Image (cartoon, rainbow, N blue to C red; front, side, top):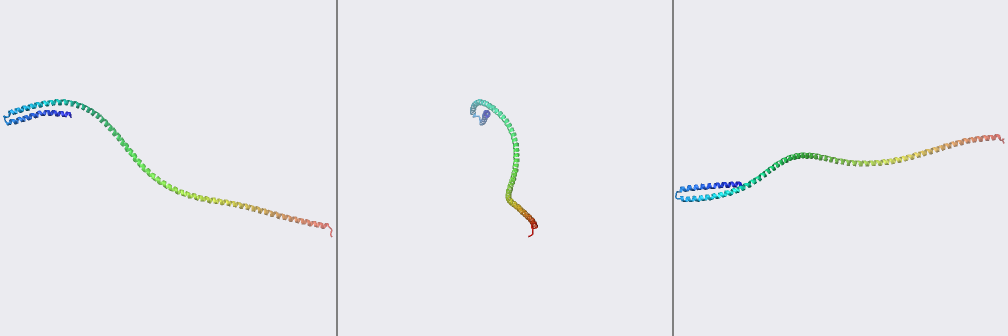
Length: 243
């Protein structure tokens, strides 16, 4: 910016005398057209203009010197600023190169992340599909479990009924066993009674046979006794004389 101002000052210092000369020539040409009576005035005016131009020239030289000093300081300052900016530009270039490398690395990492994200998304989709299938299987399992529970409840009811029937059957069997045991006891009593009756009948029959035999033996003995008595009577009759 200071360099631009310095150039502007140089151009202005060069153009001011040219403008003054041009204006003087124009003024002289106008005065020449008006006549020779005013030559003295024109010369006076020209002297004034010349004096003014000398003063302007001095002022311009002073301004040029001041501008040169200022421009040198500005140039030094600009050189320092340029060096600083060049250093900053070099640093920024290095940073930009590093940033580009970082960007390239970030792009590579981003591509890897995107690929990994795509794989993860595929895994998530697969997991969702498997989850949906698992949920379907769980629903089917739940339905099967409910049906199984209903069947088990029905079976439990059936088992309870069967157990009740078995209990009734067992009670019946127990009653039948009791009846059979009673029948066995009665049969035993009947057998014992029959055995006792048969034994008693045999005893009675034996007694009757023995009595009959005894009676027969006694009859036979009585017959023998009577026969012996008859013989003894006959002997006595034969032995004893007749009276």
